[in-house]
Length: 292
Image 1 (cartoon, rainbow, N blue to C red):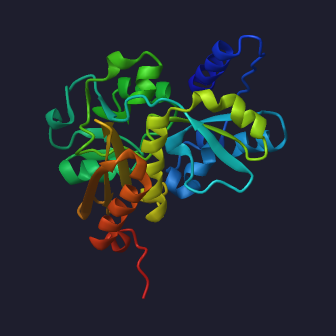
Image 2: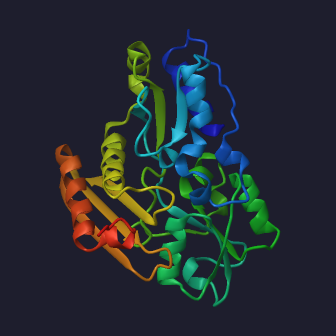
């Protein structure tokens, strides 16, 4: 609910005479907690109920974490704005240890993300990785109960809920490349609601939009989903965009990386370069997309 309330407050601040109501929905991704996302339908489970509300005119807009938005939206929908990005890194949370490097052999670490699992298996194959589902507070309670020695969460969620004090360290985004769109919020509307799009245009952050569009372009080219251990991260410095991405086998043994830098105006071309570099290194073979 934080993200919906945050956007609602931004709208109220911009348009003080406009009444803004926040509707709460439980999505299938929130309800089904005993199975990995990859086995129950992937990213789309977090947005289907909200899209139904848009179609039924129960809501004018839906707010999503961009990392949960599928690469291909159904025809009537579009992402009309992407708000300024929070820290996109992954966070190391533990009550005993200061960092991932400090964990002893056979320590138990909690995460259900195939991306995080493959990265950890690649750098720390001596650790035991256990599934971790539920909302942020539920995951922290599981850590505090002693089930895990450490857990990995998105830094953005902790920062937004004023739980930054739980972060013992953040994982270097160059080594532990984040999920596509991590830390960014997207606003989904019906394509035919041009007046709503214009109304919400102020929410769009151009730099974040460039970064997320580039990351999503790579993922789409590689058929990225929750069933694919991959990540992409774009950053802007001195008006130059740097994109890095990786693809891995689930066990973390086969891992390939690619990067490119260039003008922000060429963000999609740069993304294509990175995706093609991964393909040239055998990404589609690793992801099981090669045929014949």
